[in-house]
Image 1 (cartoon, rainbow, N blue to C red):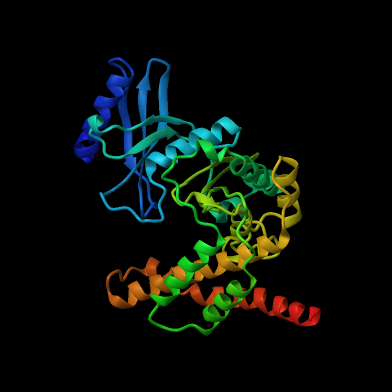
Image 2: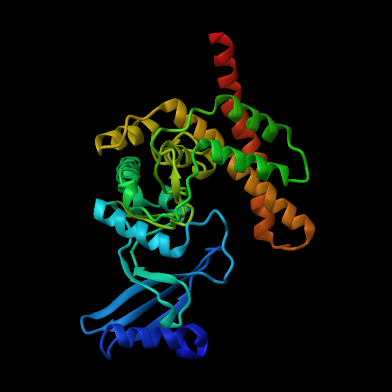
Amino acid sequence: MTEASLHPALADPLAALGRRLFHGAGELHGLRRLSGGASQETWAFSFHTPKGLRPLILRRKPHDRQSELAAGLETEAVLLKLAAEMGARVPPVFYVLTPEDGCGTGFIMDRLEGETIPRKILRDAEFAQARQVLARDCGEALSLIHRIDTARLPRTLRAAPGSVRLAELERTYATINRPNPVFALALRWLAANRPPDPAHLALVHGDFRHGNLMIGPDGLVGVLDWELAHLGDPMEDLGWICVPSWRFGGIDKPVGGFGERRQLFAAYEAAGGAPVDPFRVRFWEVFGALQWGLMCAGMAEVYRSGTDGSVERAMIARRASEVEIDLLDYIAPLVHEADDAG
């Protein structure tokens, strides 16, 4: 079957776009939708150019509605270009769609070669060398992202420092029909220990973790999925990659199951990032753990309602109990330390 027969609504205008961009060449090959990406569509394909096949990825909005927390695909494209100018490892943006293209809203970027599945990255021999340098690579990448000139960022990018993010988390908890004592305790701890918002906000990726990091045998290849980017506290990104849920069994390696915090922080500062405040990072770790726990609890509500009775939904929902353990591990020692200090 041809691409047009499998996905005519997209293949036909995409093929026309290829011919226009490459002056009559640019034949469309291998169009297929990739799994994942609940909020945005991701398509892989190639254009046959005079220089050979050019592997590409299309990020496309699937409908007119968009989460109020999403940066928007047009904004994502701008952020990727700015990050590339800083030297960050990101997929180069090839083309931003226009209404005249008939392909919807989104952008096309070069396809990177690498792996995003945590199980393979953390266990396969192919990535043994990468695991030795990934904490450093992540620190360097975040430093470059956080140093992007905020004056060049799109005006549509929302500002969400700690005070705003915590209020959002409290509203999310209020929507969960089943009270959770551990989650309620974590919310109280976060409210009591929230550091002041930074005087100057930085670009925050917002979802810097496994699944959004393309890894090759030698280390980080690219930082993907910028839809939750916002202006905020840069320590948020450093905390999120250290949340236990993203260690996938490598619990003794707090940075993504592959590295130590000291490696991450040292690389971040060496690459020009601001001095790391471990207390702020710890706040964002607790915040991130609770955020993931509430997402799991939300999926449980959807499963119980019958809206989505998939096994995948139920499997993710059950992980809310794992987060309860993580939160108690975080909060109990910190509470004792505060008592001792008093």
